Figure 1 (cartoon, chains in turn purple, orange):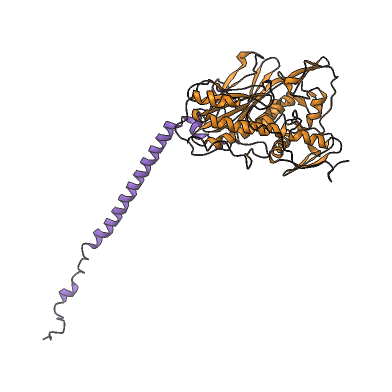
Figure 2: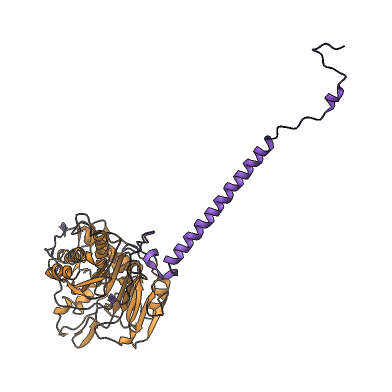
Length: 133
Length: 358
């Protein structure tokens, strides 16, 4: 007879039983994580699509093709483009505000604004070491 | 708005021009021609006219060969016999630098050394002071060319007898400078257009679609049906013509577009050329060069990529590049083609006012 500390070798059926199933919560945890990631990805993708769509719609509304430099073509006098400067307040002007034509001659050659002081020429050195003669 | 212009600008020689409610314009006589400033919002005009007036005055004091006290006239006086090396102002160095760049850009069709050729043809004073017929016999004197002219920073070397005439670029540069200074003064949002004798520079944010500008031959010259309105969103536009600034010299009709190679007025198939470019100085140089190029004008303009509009001596219009066909068409202004210094407001030239009403 077996002692209390020895296994009962006769109960072999016990040893032949299949491994008990893993705790039920292990599998649902991994799947849930995957599902959560998928949900996050899906929502992110949806938000991105909505954002892109809204931006495109807004730009299409404000910039009618090439013919709206009020937004896309503001520039410095040097012609260098200045991006993203649209204020949304640029006026609509229909009639010509200026004429590009050959230089019109008017009397009074000087400027009429203040500041017409005599010129202050720089240092003049007519006997130059670079002189040709 | 009206009271601002009516009072404040009138005292400085500016007069209001009605161009509609959304923008405001003012004009004055400057540099022997008409200067116009257009801006929005309208309440910034007082500041802008002060700034633009100061810039045009500065250019006149620097580069006018018709003023005995201008810097360039004094340099001409000093260099007439033996040439010389001169330490010149920052502004004149910029103006000469732009003129030399224009000579390179146009392959010598525009040349600032045509000064003596113009004098020999009788154009030796402000145009409004010229008599109807100069008795002197015109003498052709080809331009000596820019090879002998050296500019390094503010040091200018000028050979003996070389007279510089910056007429092909100076007005354009003046418009560029004035527009830049106005833009710095008025802040944003807002936009400004400066026209100096029909040579136009714009800055800031234009009206929707661009600044509407009429392209014409002006002063009743030519057929009014040849005029076209185009929209300029950025950069500059300039028109040159052999139909204006004409005079008689010993019975022969002269005009101010000189072929540097012959020293005589051009006689090509085109009488008027309008060009749009990244800067007004570049447009100014290109429009003059197109007239000098004569039969090669279209090919040269096509090579530059600049949109242009030519009017032949018989009134036929030829559009080049992306110049719009339709009235009201928007100009597509390319990037810079011409080198040289960019227009800038010099240090110490503080704009009047404190930055507009932004």
